[in-house]
Image (cartoon, rainbow, N blue to C red):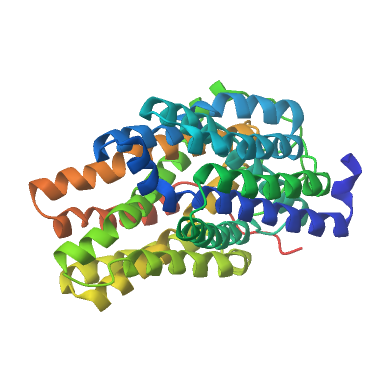
Amino acid sequence: MRGTIAGARPRVTARGAVSIVFAVHATLFASWAAHIPSVEGRLHIDDQTLGLALVGGPIGAICSVAVVGWALRCWGSRVVVRWTLLGYCVTGPLIGLADRAVLLFGALALWGAFQGALDVAMNTQGTTVEWSLRRPVLPGLHACWSLGAFLGSGLGLAGVWIGVSLAWQFVVLGAVVALLGVGLSPRLLDDPARPAPDAASDTWPEPTRTRSDLRAALRNPVVVELGLISVASAWCEGAAESWSAVYLRDSLHASPAGLGFVAFSLGMLLVRTVGNRLLVRYPATRVLPVVAAVATAGMAAALIAGGLVAAVVGFGCLGVGIGLVVPTTYSASARVPGVSAGTAIAVVSAIAWAGSLGGAPLIGRLSDTWSLPTALTLVPVLTVVIAVAARVVRVGGRYDSR
């Protein structure tokens, strides 16, 4: 497949294939959320125990970093996507079969390891397609992920409504996704041996062979800085996921409380849909500060004004403001000199996963100390940090439009 990267049609085919991988990754992930209450009831555990068990997923994803970085250097993202996608599908039913909290934690950790590894591998493949096309692709791929998440949420709700068990839902969806993965993987591209553009360069250089490992990535300040930007984004996303409904219900006494997260999700989908075109015209160092400023203004105005309409608009602005952070930081990390794309993306992903574990609990603690509206002022502060950091850290220059 080394010759695949030379032809225009195979490049476009690979883009379509990896788009589907992003979508099915999200579909499988989101499909289980609706079953969480029933899992809690079936295991007869309280909220605190459930919360501890759910941490297994992020822990598994973080632990997979060293392995997936090594695998990507050995076999490339085309091969790793195939096998991690299969593992992701096979281990899913174990969550539905777990009959104790400790087994649920273990099943989620194993599933999370494949989920996190697949996330790194498919984003690495996305940067390979970007490299071959010389234009941005990751924002559009993450838009496909957002669409897949909507589909998965709907399928999960339908499964709960008609009484399908979580284990059987994972078996059926996993089989479909696995067949898609086997069929699509030959259409993906081999990773070129590449990077090391000058940090100030605004162009895509030709690939050059580099050597890298996990230690080099962890010691690289740009990789770490990109990871910290992703942490700020993950904290904002966690605030919307975990606290938007609580804010609308308890602080604003508004209904339906889920409108805040719906607006957030739609805002994120919107900016990711137009993100490819934005990043063709303008460098990421200009785009990210502008959209982060939209989030800052929207959330600050919503918290000051109060009211359902202001809150929905504010969370929508937040989705617009952070929707491009992960795609641009992954793309930028893949171009850091002296670090292989897969390893750099794995480290940025792990930092984001690790940092995200503290976001929702911190807002909860601040809410207990003061109030939830006061605690949520952390969100516009974080979007200011993203705006400033995006200007200081090299999150990507102008893309060649070829």
